[in-house]
Image 1 (cartoon, rainbow, N blue to C red):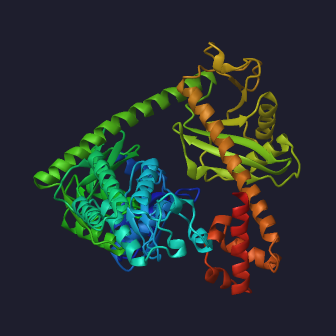
Image 2: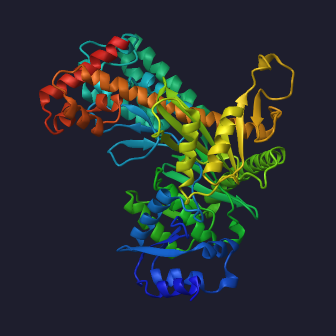
Length: 621
């Protein structure tokens, strides 16, 4: 019996109930996750009408070795579980949000007695109010600074606020009313906060009306200094609004407008974020190897949006570029409702809807051309790399290793992966070197390559880069030979020590040198070449990744030292504290109640810990 027949027999016993199916290859790696109203009917369809299947589906079927399933009570639950599993396993044949950039939001901690604004990267069900997403973190921070200064919203942390016995400098310069020492009534603070929230909601007429009323009242009561401040706030608000793009002055709801453009190879989905009639941001998601023209746009688009809205703000209305049908529309609305938001999903109809869609399409086309140009440039760099290094194939997957240590101890190796010339962060790894306890580059490289190559579920790299010159390269070549993997190409990368200060040099060759096994002289690239940018980029990323890890180790050491100074906090209690809170900032943000609820802790000890950390922070200032 053939493997295909085995799979058909396996699927014939699948239930006719809703659920999620998980397809794996011969290395037990998840390659596809799908949802189904009827598991048996949906999965069986992969093994029929082979000639009518898309090229992508044919490739998928040819790599399936085993199929598992998880039953759910409803199709809505299947949708939710599918998004979660795709995020967890990142299967090769699923549509994935490869843009791992988390867009910033403005968060208002509404549940606090005196709420404040934060920069947030994820929308959580924590009772807070979120605005966004915005495309620029700097713009978000500037907006928060404007809100704090204009409406006198506190900008201090909760721990800092609780420890205050007198107003801080921010109050002294007139930018905060000092709720930390009760110099402002809660109702007055809430009035100011509501003005700030109205500003963020785009309710400009309401904000202007309230600001004018406060200015007029202060003038009538001959509080002219206060009236001047209200006037300045009014002018600041009006100046900010003039800079925002208005697409509909009569719209009060939050909208996301979706558009996509594609060619025979790739697709880009553009999402423009309209909040209360104002265009606040746009996001482009490039979906490589998705030929949207030959795929059912209803299925892949809803699958994409299902993943997107699992982590992002859900608006009141989502406008689609295609009609996905009544059944799929209702199902997706039910999924969004399960995530906490009643939302209307509809195609772009009417003059207003089509106008918004045109804006989204225009942005999508512009961004698509930019991304395609960047992709072509990266491909040319990989081709140049293959030619100069005499590689048997274009290095689609490159792995770079950097061995580093902390003052001769805590030796660690960082593994950074680039695919198609771009970082693939989910494949980054850190290895704590176990075989030695002092610096030894050869033993370290041997161990890390050995451990890496044991993971057969990962694809082999077409190029391995080791940070260093001939010595490190020789170590890597020897290690690969001992592991029976001399077939893997490897190159050493080292900075030149002979070119002097390259910034003042007119020489086109790069200060980096690339060493190949068996070759005496190094290879260089022009600094502006795409091959050079990719290779130096992956080396710098490996450095950064290792450095961040060592900073974390140093932070943990200093944290433990700081905790050692607190009487009554023995080894067992300290271990409990570090298991619950991973950083000093997390402990500082905790309340006395949270700390006192830990096993063997009490209110007195909790208060002592927080006071010690506050005193230490003041000492640093």
